Length: 110
Length: 122
Image (cartoon, rainbow over all chains, first blue to last red; front, side, top):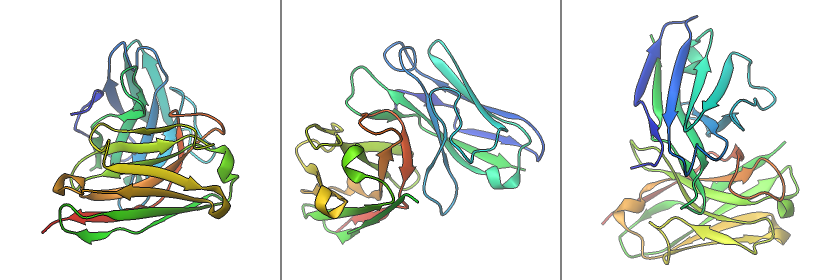
């Protein structure tokens, strides 16, 4: 069981906007930056958002992130079929030595 | 471009050992901390172990502490994970990943390999 909680699933139709949430505590999200990883079928996990709201080069601007207190969110605008996959939030925790991940949110594009 | 290619996975009975390798290229290996992250079937991502850029610090998840050892060989640009006393719960795809920024630890995993599958079963 992860120290970061994500809604297990989310869905939307092409073109819609979807928001995925990640809830933590004062020992993790509350004191450190949040990152988001995208896992698409058959591909290596990919960094999508880092330091709450920064996009690596090559990530479309329809992906955006934010953080408030001990929670964070990932918003995907203009949803596309190729966005279907699993999304994980991550950060550091005061009581653990390495990165901690949320349980993941499975995004379905209907 | 950055490439991380894992190898060494396979099917082993409980109690046996395996050594995973991650061949790195496209960046200055000696300046980046490296990690192992696994994903069990139907489960989420779990950080397993990592080593600082200079191998001076090595950290492990509680679930593998005392059984797994992470190491790196800068001359070969390769990261390793020695896994001893394997358990069925260690069954997963094991990915290696590099920090996004050089000389940093445990922050952003900027690039990941495809992974190598490990199955622990009798």
